[in-house]
Image (cartoon, protein in one colour):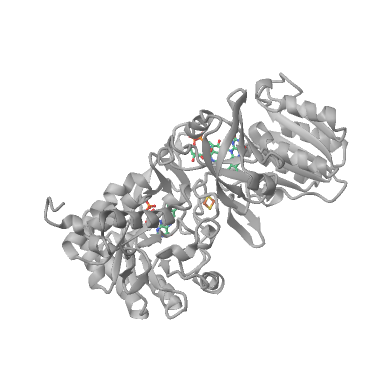
Length: 274
Length: 310
Ligand SMILES: Cc1cc2nc3c(=O)[nH]c(=O)nc-3n(C[C@H](O)[C@H](O)[C@H](O)COP(=O)(O)OP(=O)(O)OC[C@H]3O[C@@H](n4cnc5c(N)ncnc54)[C@H](O)[C@@H]3O)c2cc1C
Ligand SMILES: Cc1cc2nc3c(=O)[nH]c(=O)nc-3n(C[C@H](O)[C@H](O)[C@H](O)COP(=O)(O)O)c2cc1C
Ligand code: FES
C-alpha cells in the first residue's frame, strides 16, 4: 500500500464511453490481488496536480497486471467530470495513484468450480479474477450482463479467453435481448445454479444486481463474495466516509468499503442500509 | 544561515513544527503511516472520541463539492474505553504529540471522556469538539452558544490537568463571543474552524445527496472563511490558536499563521494528498530560508502589523 507517480503507457477507448488505461507501476503489478483497487488522481502531474476541482481521487479496480512489463490495467467508464478528465490523459503523462488498496477476493480451495457474475463495469475486476482462477486450475463460469450488446464491454476478450481455455465458460445476458440471454444476469445465474453444482460465487456490479445475486446465492446455498462501491474520501481507511452496513452477531455495524472491503461475504451485507 | 526554527508550543504542548493533522481526516494516524513518517508531524488530532461507541450515520456520508467536500460521518468511533486499550498503545512508539478530540451529547459525557484520558501516557492534550454539525444532540449545539460552550469547557477543566484546546464552529454570528467565553472557562488554546454547515441535492435521485441531509463543508473552498475567523479572534483576544480550514500548501498555512495562528492543522487535503502534512512542513522551511527568517514564531499574527510594513 503506497503512493506512486506512474507514467501512463496507454489510454485507449475500447468501447462506448469505456477506456482501458495502462500504467507503468511494477510494485503495484507485483502486489495487486483481484478485487483490490487504486485511488487515482484525475489531475496529471504538471497539467493540474495543484488543481482543486474536482478535489478527490477516483477509486478504480485493478483490471489486470502484467508483472513482466510492470504494467497495471484499469478499465473505466466515463460517467462524470473525474472520469472525463482521465479519458483525456495522454501516453507519457504522469498520474499519481495510491494502491493497491482494499481487501480483494479470497481464492477457493484447489479444483473448485466457481461462477463470476458481472453487471456492467463489474467485468473490470472480475476479468482479473478469472485470469487468476484459471491460473490455479479452477473451472470458471463467467456470466456477464448489460443493458444491451454495446455495453457488454469485454465481449471480445471473454470469447477469446474461451477459445484458449477449455475450463473457462462465459455466458451473456442483455436486458433488451440484443445478445445472449434476454433478462438480468441474475436470471442467468439461476439457470446455471439449477443445472450445475457450483462451489463458490463472486459478483461485482450495480448494487441492485448484487442484492439480487446475493438472494439467488442464498436460495441455492452457494457461498459468495460481492464487491461493493461507495463514495470515498481517503481510500485508506482513515476518514470513515465509505461506510456500508454489515450484519454481525448481535446486530449491525458500519464497515469501510476502502479498507475492510471492497469485497464482502454476500450474506453479510445489509442491503437496507440506505 | 543556520536552519530556521520551526518549533512552537501551544497550550503547553511542544511541537517540532507547527503542522498537525486535523481530527477525522487522518484516522488515528496509523492509517497514514505507509505514506508519511508520522514522527515528522508537529502533532496529530485523532478522530473524535465519545463515551460510548458510536455507529455513525447511514451512507452516503460524503459528497464532493466545488474545491471541497461535504461530510456527515456522525462521529463513528469505538468509544473511549476501546480507544485507550487498543489504539493509544499503538501510537506510543511514535515521537508525536497525540491530541485527542473528544465529543459528547451531554456535559457529563465530555467530562467522563476527559477524566478517562487524564494522566494517560501518550495523551498530550484534549481538543474539545463543541462544533460537530453531524450529530443530532450535543456537538455543535454547545458551540453556537457562549454560555453552553463555557459549561462544557468548565466541566472538562475540573476533571483534567491536560492541555485543553477548544474547537470552534464557524456557524455563528459572533465567533469572538464564543472564543472569549471558553477561554474564560479554562481553555488553554482554541482551534478553528470546524466545518461549515452545508447541503447538496442529487438532482437525478431528486433527494439530498447525503443520507443525513446536511453535512459539514471542508477543503480549499472554506479557507477564506477560516482565515477570517482566526484573524477576528486573534485581533480581539490575542489567544493561542490552531488554525485550520482548507490548508493544502505552505502558502495556505502561512496565511493562518500571519492571521494569528500559532499552529495549523491539515484536514481534507490528506484525503487527496496523503503527503500534504509533510509537504506543508517542507514548504514552511523553504519559505523561512527564502525570506531570511530564523524562527517561524516571528510570523505569528504579523498581518495585523502596520500597513505597508513590507
Ligand atoms: C472500489 C471501487 C472500484 C471501482 N472500480 C471501477 C472500475 O474498475 N471501473 C469503473 O468504470 N468504475 C469503477 N468504480 C466506480 C468509479 O469510482 C466511479 O465511476 C467514478 O468515481 C466516477 O467519477 P466521476 O468524477 O466521473 O463521476 P462523478 O459522478 O462526477 O463523481 C462525483 C463523486 O462521486 C464519486 N462517485 C461517483 N460514482 C461512484 C461510484 N459508482 N462509486 C464510488 N464513487 C462514485 C466520485 O468518486 C466523486 O467523488 C469503482 C468504485 C469503487 C468504490
Ligand atoms: C471526513 C471528515 C471527518 C471529520 N471528523 C471530525 C471529528 O471527528 N472531530 C472534529 O472536531 N472535526 C472533524 N472534522 C473537521 C476537521 O477536523 C476540520 O476542522 C475541517 O475539516 C476544516 O479543515 P479542512 O478544510 O482542512 O478539512 C472532520 C472533517 C472531515 C472532512
Ligand atoms: S474512504 Fe476514507 S475510510 Fe474509506
